[in-house]
Length: 572
Image 1 (cartoon, rainbow, N blue to C red):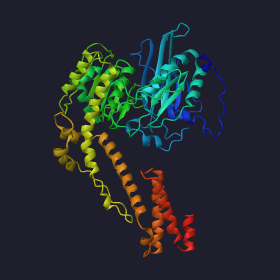
Image 2: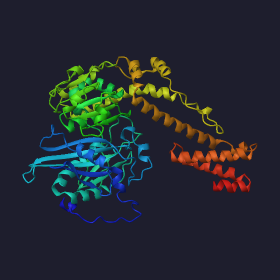
Image 3: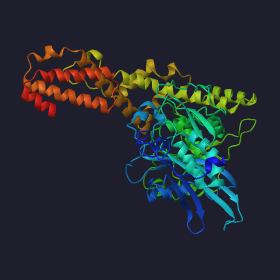
Image 4: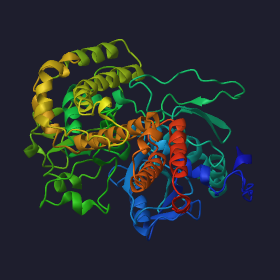
């Protein structure tokens, strides 16, 4: 690998290959940071690569603090964890030119973030007598807007040990390799070469069937050595993450569905970030629309905002490791305290649900501290199946698949009645006529929806009993309902626009023009042009031939007008 880590001048690419330097790199990562420990300054940013990438001072400070474990949890050796950071300083231009195509094709849960960065950290702390403190402490951090936790943590396992050994030249070589990668295109299987290894991944697509497992055997021709195949770019080992809380999975799913404020108190940033990411993923394919921080420190700029007692805690899941938070976040309604995750041969010790008042001391025992009462009853069959799996020494990934399937079916049972109801609010296709504005989508009325549950509720697909109506009523007040409704309403509005364009294409334009004044005809030209622009800008679900036909219609209409008007319209 030494050959890869020699520093060489960066070759200039022909202009046609990539119009911007680092354009391909930016499709995956915003930058790579190296954070070190300075005796006088504490955590300090040693390096940001590419060198021309601009982080604000606030972002740099936050990344420095979030890249090191709290002093309470730092053991010797290597540690990997993740964080999520609010972007400061407004919208940033990026080398990567994406017109939103990725977000249109990717599942909602894997969208490229517009206002947050993810940080994927590989931290090393080892004894080193040559250092003043007697320790080598450094973090390599990949900063990206993509929530590909598995891919980026696997990438760090390959490059971080080599970087700590050979330093900057190695990092330049790796970044140059990433700058040769194809962009992440939903639905495609990609081979990503780095440091003599080919990582093979499939980028999930919005059209994938929820719960379908990725194709295990990819096309591996001409790939020697055999590629490192990642079964998923983002899915965590849910069984391992949730092992101390398996009997409370129902309660945690409800709390996440309702967007309740939750604190995860963990012994290390690894446990904290994995638990928070596991929680946010358990609503899939429904998007978790609240804020979440897989790892959070007292130095964070939002610390005051989250610890104030003058207002209710925000809708956020926050992962912490510093015991100081037990005191400052005591007023939060749900606190999950977990210990180190250790996989053992039998069911791990399950935490108990305890009253919040018992959360007082620094040595607080693991538990879920809450007064929340679940709307639905526990699913005892799930626990039995997982227990049977433990007894039969079933692999963790099989147990995880079981757990993920259960959560998926639970979410689908809850969301399908909502999908059916909202689909009924769409105007009938026969109501869409070419020369009138398309009809409006009818408003969502909660009480009307509740009436549909008697004959088309979750009981059709889910065996769980309980107060489903109460759960829906509470869900309507959550940011997750708001996010789901906005997304659906936007998709339906675009579908209406598309149907209207198709209706126009099928109409007899010449017959319509016969008894119309010039003013009405010019008005139609302007409206059709506006529709065409909107269809292209918003990437409406319309066939290209339909758009071309509308373009021809516009030309036909203009051609029927007097020459002076034609000139004006062609210049307009």
